[in-house]
Picture 1 (spheres, rainbow, N blue to C red):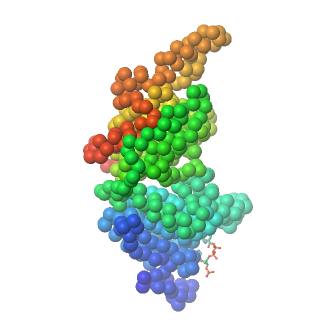
Picture 2 (tube, rainbow, N blue to C red; picture 1 turned 45 degrees about the horizontal axis):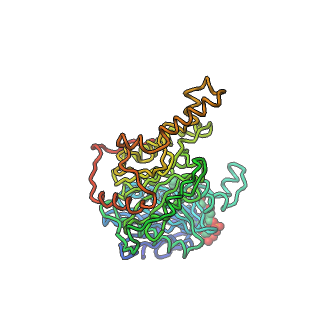
Length: 458
Ligand code: HXC
């Protein structure tokens, strides 16, 4: 707290404040050690001098060494303009520690005021970013610079407010109404995470019976396979006390990611959402889920994957945007993940998306399906139109062939016969079956071949 900046220019030598605009230290959240820094916008706009940076670096190094999560409360105008290159060096020192800490301890950024320049790049290198609505902003350059360079007129809120980053850019994982909500939710969020990659997330006592059945799940899937349903109902109904901490809920809504507890243990959930784009995988949803899968894997958090996916979203926008490489991110993330993986196919599992969504072939540990599952290369109609292109005009023939294809593949039995599914389960028993599967995996040991690291298609 006694640290002051060392800037000698622009009259700054007579303008020092103890702590230099950042409070750093350690404490306990949910009775577990954490390291934290909080920037103070009232001191030079929370801007980062080399002294300010060295304070942050100090707690980052301690967090890595002592294996405790690192929390940043960010409120900073970026590099201290009066200091010049030394403050840029200070930022690089922070970025380096962000990279070194990645995968060792969870890093969480809470954006609590205007953040510009380097002040957004350090959060971007952390695992999760949360923002406060209406008072926090993140941009590389602010509205004034944008106007000068591109002639665009944009408000700070439009350019980098919480809504922008939770709906358009996906930079932020969530946002909260005010500072107090944000801090309380951070505590709740931290309770799901382990302190580091060598410790386990703490188990929370639950009174929710592992044998609790949910009869409504037996009728969750509509009779008409083209009708959607809300996958969140399934997540909530199997979770302990029906509590689900959702991440990125307003971005790429065709996939759901978040944390639940099952019999007290933290579980990462990835689920296709049939309510949006029929649950198709596209560029945004693949990226969103891939990063989450990698986080869970890095910290040994078991993953539950709930599958209802008609395939990858077709179209020029997707192809030009690189769906091939982006879809491969999720495929790669699941393939390399060694954390316990339990998969449940509720309805559709078509084409490459079947493979991607934590299939048996990607080392899914327990792969289940409901009786309503349909596992095939593609939907019956599309399949028949390709196989019998010349007879498309013959409705009776096409209908017959479609029925034939449906009878053969619109069920989970073909996959089960091949051992690609471990069991076909009754929907109302899902909570019990999934908990049982994870409990058998709690001492799972699986190691990928030795390497420096894999080259995920970034
Ligand atoms: C020194 C700064 C500062 C900075 C703000 N202040 N940013 N001082 N260095 N980077 C000071 C202001 O002079 C002011 O001082 C006080 O903080 C509050 O700032 P305001 O502008 O009055 O606040 P507000 O209107 O809320 O606007 C906040 C802001 C804006 C959007 C963050 O201040 C801003 O655009 N700042 C500059 C952002 C920027 O370009 N930073 C450098 C980026 S380059 P007084 O004395 O008047 O109270 C960078 C390099 C690293 O970060 C890149 C690594 C990849």
